[in-house]
Length: 279
Image (cartoon, rainbow, N blue to C red; front, side, top):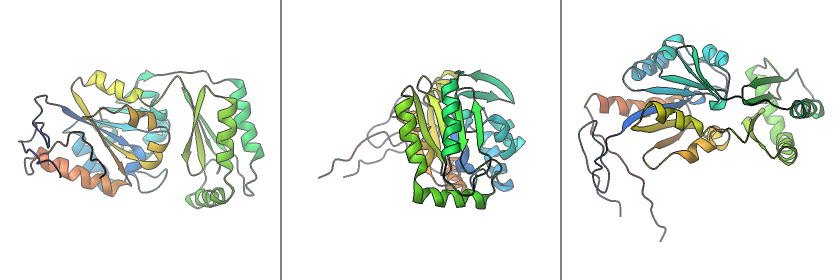
């Protein structure tokens, strides 16, 4: 049976079992890929205005697997200016108001670069183009579909990859040769390589350093949770909330509830962590 929920005014923390005396500050974390309708797409005008308005009421952070230049291309300036910070390169950098605040650096070895080059050369994809290799301070991204590929070309490679599974072979080979690094499926067409000494879990630590009583409310894509953001998701505590969403429409619906709570038009419920036992 479900426990009876306890309702409380906006800003008060409550739960289905008993009220919690500690008051949390909700800090929101958005995976960039949840804010656009297509991979590498830009945030639409109306949604950008809505997001900027919300970020003016609550601390909001952005998380992206890409570099900051790519974030600026996809995110309007009014949204970036409204954010408390932007984590780029899979969380290895923190930018605030276009200024770099934190950078985790790691020198990738020559062997790793040579391996990446061989991976591209060995690909049997018949319509190969020059690959995109993006090196961050503690990450290396490889897009097997090729640099400046159109949406159609990305889909064509993704369909070919489903049949031939060459990226799975690359992941196995890389894991065996470089056990001190982690490799993830970055997208349907590429890979993300990071040293094991760094993980996206540090994103949570950086947020808590700036917001001592924060409860992190995150909106992440499924592919991110299965990839580079998996350590972050595992680091969330019981009071944090992680929602795996499909895109901007899902985020918009969730934020509309948060906006109603802020405006006092809806009672706020805090569902503390609890488990249902299978009978």
